[in-house]
Length: 345
Image (cartoon, rainbow, N blue to C red; front, side, top):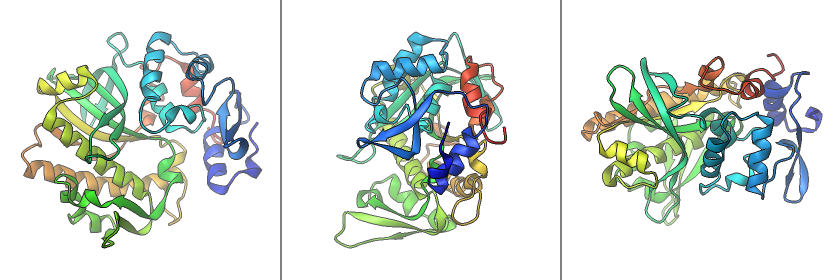
């Protein structure tokens, strides 16, 4: 099925841990990239990187989607961001595909009960690729998923902005990242980038006079991009609360009515989280260590700004493993593909 031997080391480790089982029976083929097949990526058969209807219907058939009307709507949202998602969403390691399959079916008819930081919430609405303005005249923050629901005990409305990762925190590690210099003067991001949390994470800012970017440097190999992305999402949520204008009326109306806002990150951790990155640490442990420091700094700043009653950054990372035995996910094919096809599953 897969030609593991011809893959790069990282891709082979990823694909074997997720889909290395001899029981693997999903229809896949090598990904076509710039007119040639690549040995490092596989795509679901009978999908398309150009035809959205063919792509959506192919995925719906493969995963035996339970609610086709809702899937059609949410698929459209998932490929509607600024990241050319249609070109990649049918690749089997797509982060956008993972979040879509797990969260498309959140509805009044199929509520998702989730425990978050020791509290139970019931979500009945999901929106994908939700954009918040971050820096004027620059790319927006594309929030992978936004969930709307209530706190189970108090009935208080809640809006949960969720950044979702599949394998990026394992694959896209490094020791430096170029970031637009405007982030060092924005009122919300400056307070984070200039705080002690950077050195606490083993990160350092290197300014380059006359350059439009600064460098975020790390003492060790880690997922630096994930830290930058969470800061951008934090700025986007702060900006959203300032103006309460967004493309989705359900989200905007909930926040206008006083909903509690949660900002957090969910990672696919089964198998992938145990893979080692360049510093010898497990991918999940490495990123979790830094995320916790960052979340604490953001929550401290929210307290200073008098916003902690309205916005909370989750103190720890969530995992897709919570859905492995969940009745919220109606399609057994989704659970099989993500939880049962690994080399040691």
